[in-house]
Image 1: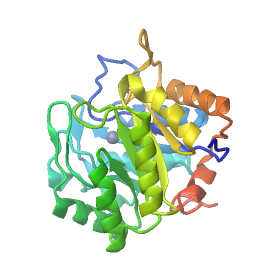
Image 2: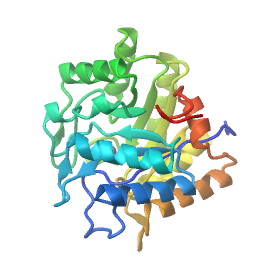
Image 3: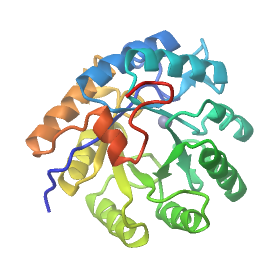
Length: 284
Ligand code: ZN
């Protein structure tokens, strides 16, 4: 059934894999990230998903970089939802949550391990639990990253145990080589199970690479939220590099209009996700 509820657009600005040589528009330094996020916010993104990099573009876990990004973006876009990545590539387990004391609005949390194109994305049970507890105790809402169906059931168990506060926000990820393929019937099944297991949960669908806009169209039709950004997809289409994160967001805004879905402002997105109206320390 079609939905006319507002759609939250998340923008994953950098990630850990794309390089500037793949797409010169990729923001790598914190200053570039803040500028790119502000443009994406002005284009319609309400949530920014952040990885930070070293000068040589390798993934960084430096809390100072996360802090500088958060401070900078809150100056320019006080109500944007800031989500830090606790994702794996190139980072030791103990480093992946080392910036959570900065209390971003949200942080990503994968509730199981999965194969990625060339590595195992390792999330052992004790590690998942300790990240969930750190997030809960710092008032950070997790975005549960579901790469595989077991991760949804693990989430329900963590909610039942009180390690994740209900209702959770879940992101279904498609199109990562060696994980789930981009298939609408799989998303439909996952959403049906989510509704059964975790009533009131919100969800986003993310498609990687050439699947991005196709997966976004399913989410728009099914009442979910969308993710875009150069972390997941560096092209507008097969022949054209995306000129910016904002250009990808603009494309999804257009798709939302075609599907009769209003785009959530950051303030509306905060209400939909049960987050405080303004970032800590910001009036309103
Ligand atoms: Zn990420």
